[in-house]
Image (cartoon, rainbow, N blue to C red; front, side, top):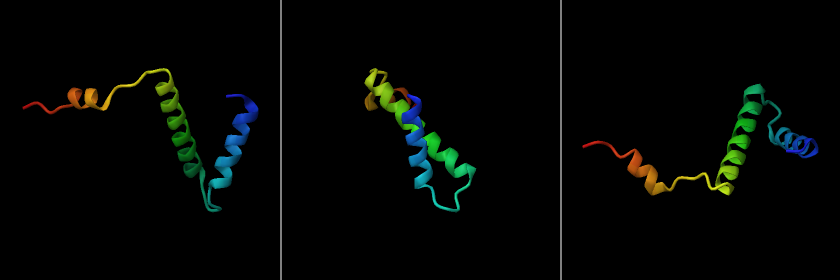
Length: 62
């Protein structure tokens, strides 16, 4: 992400925090944002596994 866009995203994250927010609140927002962006990128790059495949993989043994 280019620096100018990153700065705008960070400003938006800060603006959304309540006045009594602490570092943990900010770090959580950053973590969630990064996780969503990574998931979207994985989807665009077709690095996905279907729901059915996951169910088969984690099906309990009988």
